[in-house]
Image 1 (cartoon, rainbow, N blue to C red):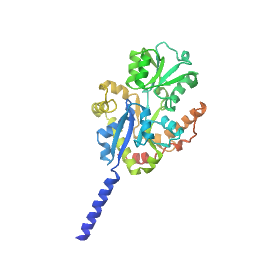
Image 2: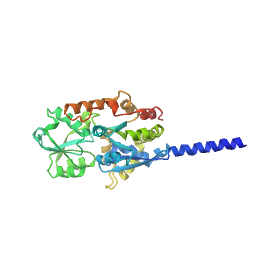
Image 3: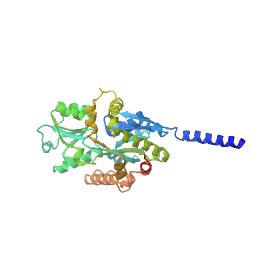
Image 4: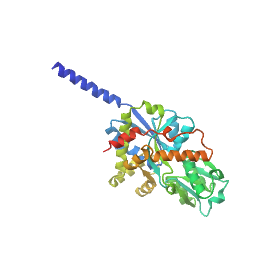
Length: 332
């Protein structure tokens, strides 16, 4: 009897210890307005992380730079960001690691000009952008090169999305790069036309999950696998058309909180402008030598060609896909 009691105590202690191991509250930051990060909102709202024993708090910020500040100041554990932005942080001496690629923009980011305006006549003029980081300059360079121009032919004016759309509508800017509801508003109200999108250069703007290296090193790999399993389940849930109505409710309450709710048609249109990776695509992107490796290699070449490489790197310096590969291997 005493032996059975002792075994019971050991089992109870082990269970308590297991719960304690997953008692940390993780914080994940994302910017408003981009549906590519919506699996985080779904995983939180539907309890997919809780099912995995993970306590996750999603922090929605107005702009990408805000999420990066939270990461740099260690106010969050994870930043959902453009991978080009991770490169930028790395070159600034911030030791970041991309632990997964999650989606890419497929028409969501759009270069718009005033109707009847030729981009070649705007040399020397300002183009409004929401960031001057490599995440965006890389795409602009692809478009400019296609039209026998170069990045240095233009002045890039960085500002937040809404003021940029306002300046475009007012005619202060003749060109701007916007996404989400603001690009729709600028085109409709500002006599604008779309001349290029990320869909023209598939995979040119990829996003992923970014951590500081020491935070990654201090995070149990089992926790990371559980976090990814919650994400993977959320992606599958989003891709099930039967859940769309509820999905609209979730993103209106999270990504677009504080704004008038967007209609199902508008959300559907925005969702079509992003490619959220399913299991198969994510596996191809994050495997050794896969699409993420190639993308980082291309970014490095772009930076060198434009004299923008502040700190050299190899692709493998910037990503660690062990946990996501394990989660994908064991995904349901």
